[in-house]
Length: 355
Ligand SMILES: Cc1ncc(COP(=O)(O)O)c(C=O)c1O
Image 1 (cartoon, rainbow, N blue to C red):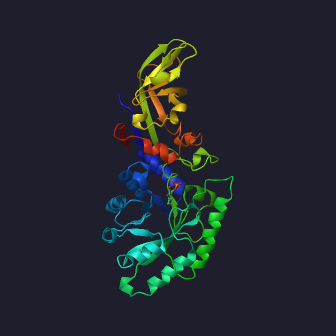
Image 2 (image 1 turned 90 degrees about the vertical axis):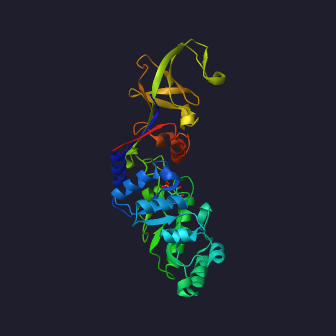
């Protein structure tokens, strides 16, 4: 018996089709496709009609090119491996005027998307006027030395916030700048929206793509959405190895992790933080035989779950599935959806993809 990471491929693809509704989507593939596996995810997205991909790491972009020879591939972090970009037709962010001026010669022929910094302040031009300066400088060098300015983009960092005005502010700044700069230059690709923004506003006018991550992978970006908006095709499960009874006042687990108030049945389950179950996740429950039971202690390879006498050795224990979803724990403060996904240890969990 081993703890398992099980992905239901058809359910994953059905969900992607349901989420995108034939809208133009650039799938975010970073961190090994939110830890679903780059090869699986690229193939599944292609089957669903997605032909644009973005990631932060050049190595991943190159692998996407191998899997998707005709796709638009956009690198969201700058790279100075210009020949690799050229060889694999990878388009890249242009994060600042300083980057352009430092690498102007090497950027010849590279396709870039100008990045607007906006409220997130992670990367990008501070103003649209700075972008126009770079567009003009680029226009003023001989054609064969020019970079190809094909796109314009930003990232909304506040689209899942409802108590503050910041999403409204960042959207207004972006749309105002977009309208202004579009008079100077024609961009083929314009993309700004993450999952939360796409759900709130649909695809914004004049945008070529919504740049979606988490909703494609089956988690809601914010809590007030109905579960039906996206479905989780991933299950993480383990096994009851044995059930032990401890008396009132006894402790189980390291350092008195759990001390009982009454005689208690504890299931010993073969999954722990070494498999990527977050400690915050262990403050909540898991599912055995269709019912919820509280996790009482988390160890590296095991956990204790308080159970009743319906639970016996050999029973399946579900940590995550569409019935006990990652996003519900996100909204209880366990950690971001992507944080819970990324933590899962593919080297220790048995990884299975059910076609
Ligand atoms: C630049 C950028 N665009 C898009 C996304 C996708 O966001 P989400 O997973 O919320 O859809 C991310 C994710 O962090 C991102 O960093």
